[in-house]
Structure formats: C-alpha cells, structure tokens
Image 1 (cartoon, protein in one colour):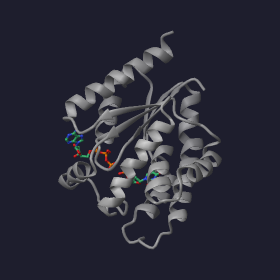
Image 2 (cartoon, protein in one colour; image 1 turned 180 degrees about the horizontal axis):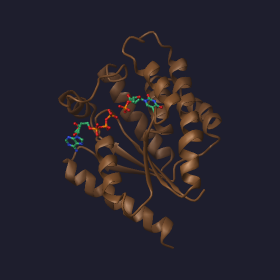
Image 3 (cartoon, rainbow, N blue to C red; image 1 turned 90 degrees about the vertical axis):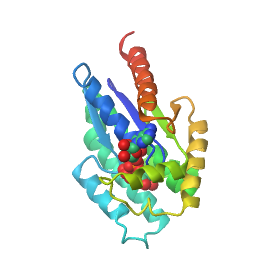
Image 4 (cartoon, rainbow, N blue to C red; image 1 turned 90 degrees about the horizontal axis):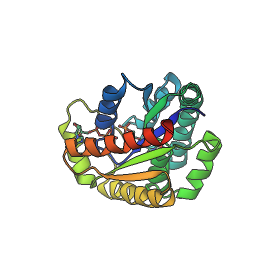
Length: 212
Ligand SMILES: Nc1ncnc2c1ncn2[C@@H]1O[C@H](COP(=O)(O)OP(=O)(O)OP(=O)(O)O)[C@@H](O)[C@H]1O
Ligand SMILES: Cc1cn([C@H]2C[C@H](O)[C@@H](COP(=O)(O)O)O2)c(=O)[nH]c1=O
C-alpha cells in the first residue's frame, strides 16, 4: 500500500469533522488527500448510515447495529479507501474501526474483543497507519452539537449521558490497546489550539512516511 490511512476518532461533538475539513483544505494543494467518513462515504454505506442513525429505529438490536456498521465499513473500504491508498493518496477518515470498539464493543456491552473479531472479518485486518483521538467530556461535546444548527441529531446522539460516558471510557481502553498507532489530543481546548496540535502530528507523520 503506497498511501497513508489516517483516522479521526472521538465522542460526539469533539471537533473531528471541523478539524479534518480544515486540514484537507490547507494541504490539498501540496498533497493528494481524500477526505471521507464512516458510516458513509459511498452510496451503499450512506444508505446503511441512514438505517442505523434514523431516530425512529429505536428497536434496533445491538448486534444488528454492530453488523450494519461493519457492513458499511467493508463496502467503504473496498470501494473507496483501498483504491485511494493503492494510488498513493492520504486518506483522512472521520471514524473507523475504533468507533465500533468504543460504541458497540464497550458502551453497548458487546465486548471490545468480540467487535474486533467481526471487524477483522470485514476489513481483512486493514488498520490505520495513524489514529488521532479527540478527547472531550461528553457534556461539552453534546453542548457543541446542540449549539450547531447545521448538525442533525441522530439516534446515537439521543442515547443517555451514561452511554456517552461509557463511549469515552471505551475509547480510553481502545487507545491503550492500540497505543502504537493512536495519539490522544485534548479536544476540550479552543479550536485553534486543537487544530495546531493535530496539524503538527499530521506534518510529522507525512515527514516520517514520505520524506525518508
Ligand atoms: N475545540 C472546539 N471548541 C469549541 N467548539 C468546537 C471545537 N471544535 C469543534 N467545535 C464546534 O463543535 C461543533 C461540533 O464539531 P464537529 O462537527 O467538528 O464535531 P465531530 O467530532 O465531528 O462531531 P460528531 O462526530 O458528533 O459529528 C461544531 O459546531 C464546531 O464548530
Ligand atoms: C463508525 C461508527 C459510528 N458510530 C456512531 C458514532 C456517531 O454517534 C454516529 C456517526 O455520526 P457522526 O456524526 O458521523 O459522527 O455513529 C458507531 O456507533 N459505531 C461505528 O462504528
């Protein structure tokens, strides 16, 4: 694989989307960047996203939810991410496998290792080169999305505060499990500080991988 696969993780409203979009804009003249997201990024996966996140689907079973995320991931990976990496692109992906480990594995109580197994089947063990995790208190993240009029509220956003605390705890466990590829950023800081920190990590990673 010639390219670089960088994923961005964190709870609701942590600032991932805002920072990735700015990163893509600032570096698109000098680097071949593909910006994408999960669940979604391609037609089939966007359709699965709509089914998972529809606020009316409150009856959805936790394992069904986990399998749908994994199915969307599989299609997005083979249709979009892997071809871009083959061409040498830098793929910036808003959420990937660690979201399933934290949300379905830990917060839903299905087990991090169980969810890892079904995702290894889906991804054939393709993992990111780097994962930047945006760490923020659930209340702060939820306050940010509530203040953002352009952001639709989905079924997962509407979970209890207890669930959102478990998501954060789940992420901490996952970051520890995969510490070789994960970097934690304090996303409670102001946006400019968060952006500068992520940009520095990004530049360092590009140097290490492309300018040997
Ligand atoms: N560091 C920050 N301080 C204050 N507000 C922020 C910060 N980062 C992002 N925001 C604002 O918070 C809102 C949510 O940000 P964003 O959509 O980037 O989060 P996200 O992590 O992608 O959320 P989600 O995964 O829930 O969609 C936006 O209105 C954004 O402008
Ligand atoms: C990939 C993935 C996502 N989720 C959750 C996390 C969020 O609540 C939504 C996606 O919404 P966003 O605005 O695009 O962040 O889905 C999950 O539970 N499991 C996953 O694998």
